[in-house]
Image (cartoon, rainbow over all chains, first blue to last red; front, side, top):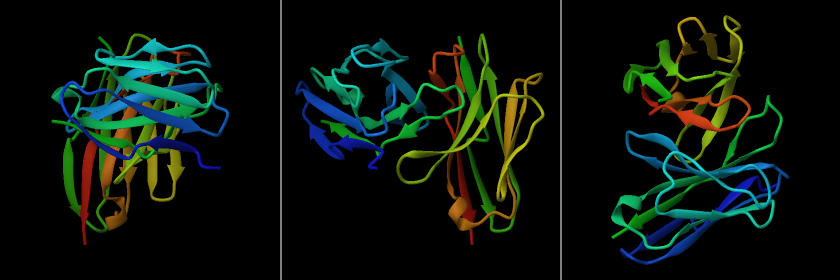
Length: 113
Length: 112
């Protein structure tokens, strides 16, 4: 059981470049999330998904797109990266029961120059 | 606007000390509050609290929720250097959505 994995672990982009972050989970969880974490800001929800084929906006969705074509994968896309998107990105998943919690991936450190 | 506020922002203690971390929330409808520990990488789950006054305990860590005061505390007794981490509080809102608002975290450093 690998849990939640994220690819890549680190990435440096130039302003205007695009990239996709991949999150994969092998726990058959319904819910998946993308957060960003900046110094002094805690975790902020970017987008989330309540099931395969569905996505919804979180607190800070601008500049990002997501897709959940398969239940186990949740992709986060940056179409035109900006320095303000320099951050650590965490993916999480959880099952649908009310007493369960989220399980986090190891994070992706993204720097946009 | 829903929000979660943690205090203090940072704390430095010596091994053996007891610490109390605070989390207060303002949300339209409350269902659960969660505590996480974050060391170098991903947050790891500590406690989920849904009912007022019921203490959750795990080793030297304990937590309790006060719905009247809209707050929770996380206690760590006999601190060790391995307790050094960021402690995050999150509240599920709206209830049943499994969406969470996180506080900014409390950075705890335990000195040997």
